[in-house]
Length: 193
Image 1 (cartoon, helix red, strand yellow):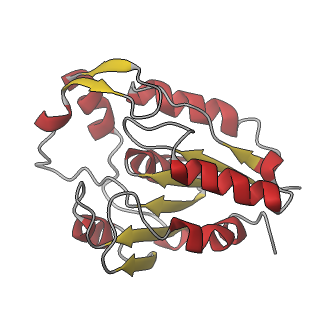
Image 2 (cartoon, helix red, strand yellow; image 1 turned 60 degrees about the vertical axis):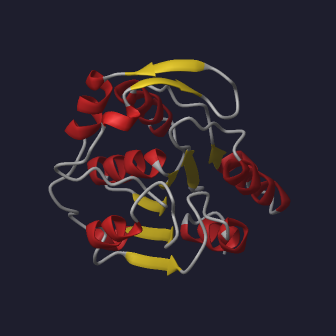
């Protein structure tokens, strides 16, 4: 049964992001693009999760989640819930005491220009997804760059202790060396040998 990969973009992002497009282009070059799912996620967390779960229900074979930033948080949540593997790229980690105030308010999607409101209720939906601990950390692969200007890489390193971790010096929140890891991500997902 063929494997599949689900790419979950971040907050204010879309399938038009450079990471999503690079992954899809490389999958196309290798003849496995039909096994990659990458759709625009709702800005409402519970709706975004429902979108991915509906798509996962139709996955033809073993599914791997790849998530960036908030998409990484969603990927971790769904991997725990459905016993899946996940690659987490500079993922958000919402720890107790996380200051969500900068996220509440009006925002604009960086790629579509769509404006949306992110509310305290949306933050509560995200917080409700936070696992107490990882049941099987070996299912996860953390890809992070230390100079992430948006999220504290140290939180992800601590949260995903026991997981495979590739933590690189320098970089930024976009994960500047993404192209260097495309084949390895596709291999981790079982799409290529």
